[in-house]
Image (tube, rainbow, N blue to C red; front, side, top):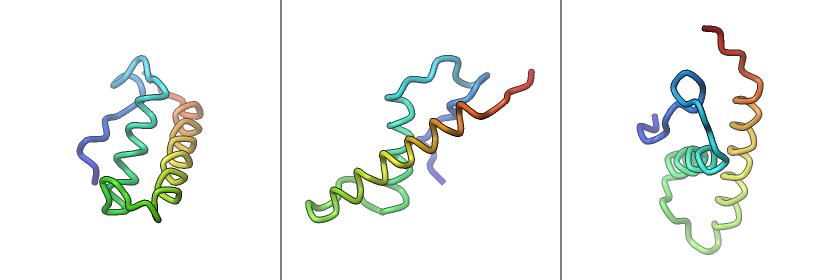
Length: 68
């Protein structure tokens, strides 16, 4: 769906920063909403969605058990 979102779990990414997680969340919200930059009246909803997706992504990554 979103080709620009890279995999953020080991072994594909060893060190993942908050910026990496936020960038992935931003790409996802942009794709789903269809807005690269939302209008002022949609900015709050857009930013809130990015924060929620970033939080959910962080929760997911911290819960995954990767077996080698």
